[in-house]
Structure formats: structure tokens, C-alpha cells
Image (cartoon, rainbow, N blue to C red; front, side):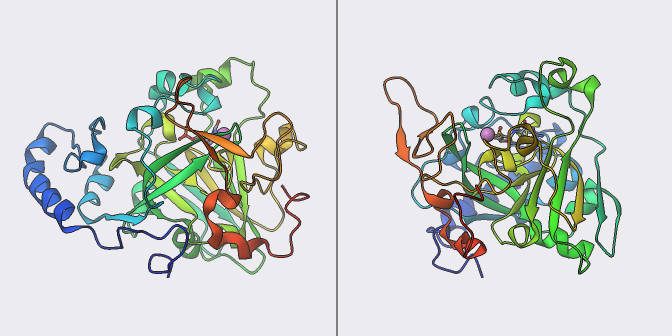
Length: 333
Ligand SMILES: Nc1nc2c(c(=O)[nH]1)N[C@H]1C(S)=C(S)[C@@H](COP(=O)(O)O)O[C@H]1N2
Ligand SMILES: [Mo]
């Protein structure tokens, strides 16, 4: 399957954790009991790639799973990780404001425990599911993915989570299900950006995928990054990550997942359908009216080191191409 295939995203460092990392993790885990007693667990303090990561305080359902993570199950080869500081301080999460620093500043207000996700629509097993129960059946994997925003910046982020397909299969989609609709939490009293009234967005934030896209092994539900739980600004406690599409498809802080027959109305498409399509596949040939999509700024960058690189079709994830054979990508952008 995906992990073993020599595809564009397959792990170079192979699907087995390198022994040195494994051993130091074991050493670390041996010391973890003390850290747990303090209520915080810096889960990847073992690895220098994870330097600078703020220790989180994972909820019980996550702490239990961290010892069995399949580390680096997908990596983008030799590309450097975007430092933790940049991943967690340069964000888009309009519920908390429109500037890049707003989510880090204000998303702390979001209450993420307890958290329930409603799974409904065209499924044999609908119902509300407590987050811990939703995550419980899954072994967590680390996937290091490129994230490409339509604003022409990009990052490389080590996510922790499980394939979206596994979650969907558990709900048992009926024969009528053709799309998946996702909805974000809406809690105005906790969300300064929603209260401000300046935003043109019709809340809650909604995204969607065609069912075959959602079932693709690269489509991922993240519950963590950098070996710890998701910081709120990155979409705690549960978010979607679709690495071959522009970042706005990767909806944060999900409270509802619906299998539906018709194509859902999504937030950015409703706002400006000439600028943001439903598919939103990364494509250097199809420009946004305000941004060329031919290149991107790989963060971190600066005036003196702009770090501009070529953008690749499907963000370099060639293995999704067959989902779109016969589709005119200029028309269905
Ligand atoms: N609920 C919600 N999800 C969202 C957004 C948002 O404003 N609200 N912004 C999207 C956009 S435009 C991008 S680029 C990514 C950014 O994810 P990051 O902040 O973790 O890098 O989140 C996406 N998910
Ligand atoms: Mo974005």
C-alpha cells in the first residue's frame, strides 16, 4: 500500500523507525513517567529535528497512543521541516482574526475538552461520537506533508493522526454517499474573529471532498503535530489535512462530518467562486486572480532569503493524479 510504494510521498527513511531514533525514544519513554506526573509530556524531546517544540499536555486519549506512533510513515524526502515556532505562529484561522498572528494570540480561548463529533448523513452508523472514542480504534501515524496555501506560501509539517478513510469506513457510507462535508466548531463567545463582524464569512466554516478523494490514503485526520497534541491555532483537537490541495481545504476544529449525495457548499467557494474552486488542487498552471500560483515562499523566509521555489502540480503528490483523469483542471479548479 501507500507506505511501501515508491511514490512521490513515500518515506525515504523507510517505513521503519531508524534504530537510533527508536532507542533514544525508548530512553525518553523510560523517563516519561516523571514528566507525566508534572502533567506535561514533551513526546519527541528525543529527536533533534524536534528542537524548540513546546511540550504539550496531551489529554489521556492521546497520551495512551503516543508510545505506539508509527513515526515518519510518510515524508517528503529531503525537505526540511518548517520550525515548530513558524508552524504555530503563522496561521490562517479566521474564527480568531484575519492576521497571521491572531490565531496564536486568541485561539487559546477555544475549549477543546470535552469534544464531540457528529457523524451523520448517508451512513449506516450515524451519531455523535466523543473524540476519545473516535480516535481510540486507530494507530496514530506521523505524516510529514507539505502544506501549500493559496496565498503562495508553504510549510513542511509533521502531523500526527490517522487516515480519513478509516474513519469513514467505520461509519459505513451508504450507496448514496458521494461527497463528504466537514464543519468547524462555531462558538462566538470564544472566537474574537467571529464576533468582530468584519469577516465576510458565513459561519460555520465548511469544507468538502468528493468521496473518492476522501478515501485516498493521503487524506488525513490530524490530532497532533510535532509529536504532541495540536495547538489550538492549528485546529485542535481534530482537523483535516489534504496535502495535494490548497490549505483552505484542510478544515480545522471539526465538529461534524456528513456523508452527502450532493456537492456541499463550501466556505471559500461561496464567498468568491471565481477565485476559489471546490477542487482547489494545487496547480502552478492555474493562477488565482490575485496570486500567481507558479511559485511559492517556503517558510521561514525573509527579505534577504526569500526562499522561493517552484510549485508542483498536486503539490508534488503525483499519486492522486488518477482521481482527476479526464477532468479539465482549468475548468474544475
Ligand atoms: N475552520 C477553519 N479552518 C481553516 C481555516 C480557517 O480560517 N478556519 N483556514 C484554512 C487555511 S486558508 C489554511 S492555509 C490552513 C492553515 O493551517 P495552519 O494554520 O495549521 O498552517 O487552515 C485552513 N483551515
Ligand atoms: Mo490558505
